[in-house]
Amino acid sequence: MDDYAVVVNAGSSSLKFSVLRRSGSTGWRLESRGQVEGIGTAPRFAAKDGSGQGLVDQPLDSTVNDARGALGVVADWLRERHGPAHVCGVGHRIVHGGARYTGPTIVTTEVLEHLRTLIPLAPLHQPYNLAAIEAVWERLPGVPQVACFDTSFHRGQPPVAELVPLPADIRTAGVQRYGFHGLSYEYIASVLPSVAPEIADGRVIVAHLGSGASLCAMKNRKSVDSTLGFTALDGLCMGTRPGTVDPGVILYLFQGLGLSAKDVETILYKKSGLVGISGISNDMRALLASDDPAARLAVDYFVYRAAKEIGALTAVLGGLDALVFTAGIGENSAEIRRRICEASSWLGIEVDDDANRRRAPRISIVGSRVSAWVIPTNEELVIARHTGSLLGLIEARA
Ligand code: ADP
Image (cartoon, rainbow, N blue to C red):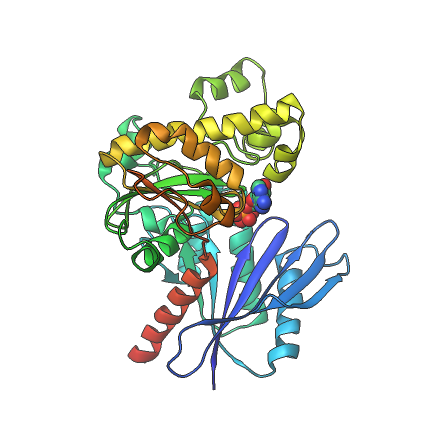
């Protein structure tokens, strides 16, 4: 019987899933993907097949108000569509694996307990990621689950890149730079040899620009530094998060403005970045379409910050061979790519406007000292591969 793997990416208000199928000697193939969105407000379920053809798109009962309910909807739909298929495992995107998890791991109660201790480091993602693991345990008892971490790809960075220069007793409590978006970077690293062989083993900065945004400096397809740190707040300007701010500002929020820790958390995770600057939206499309000066300032800052951090990571790498764009903004906005490349032209990046508009994988002119690329990411595939190979290992040992 064919093997099916289900990949789950659970957030605060949405649960995205992909079903991958492996038959005989072929690799994983996308069977269907979809999401339950509006969890807690106006839940809705939609799914498409592997070629993007719509299969279902319908509102749900408002009782679907958490991960358990959302997973119930997905499980019922899968049973209806695939019958008694053999689900060999469920792979989860888990945002934080701390220092312990340098690669994917099979979930046990002990693993889950440890991952709960990391909730304060990723309050916007980790609780929802873990709730989905518990919901799968309830709905599909006996089906093994694999946790794949956004932090793992960055383990192995030099100690100096992981350091947070605070006193030793604080550092030993786990305060270090972890980095995120690692599943996306791992995918890009895996396809560089086929998509862009001439730069695959060189000094590459990958720009993952989505609602969350970061850069990863890679040498030889290994992460040597990244702009996200202890939490997913550092570095670039994001949809609702500010990126790097002077830590003195945070002190002032507490001491000068008398805000509570909860208020500060909400400001940093939900009210800053593009939406904070513009006062209009966290969606780059809306900002690019607006001629409001505040929207323009938000876009200017997004580009400015990206170019500034590209300069910093180029220093870390000792020069640059290529810049790769990926994720929602990186893959879809020719304008943002062009502007970031132009702001980085001092490095020797020369954009080919036509290739950029066409989203050709290579978007720099022939002869550009540093090449620029667009490569769509595929975090689900990375999770499916890990899930399949970890569970294959178990079967081999049994
Ligand atoms: P996440 O997975 O973190 O939710 P995505 O990688 O899907 O984020 O990116 C989402 C963002 O991509 C949206 O906030 C939107 O601003 C941006 N985006 C999508 N399409 C476009 C586009 N055509 N032009 C500009 N921005 C876009």
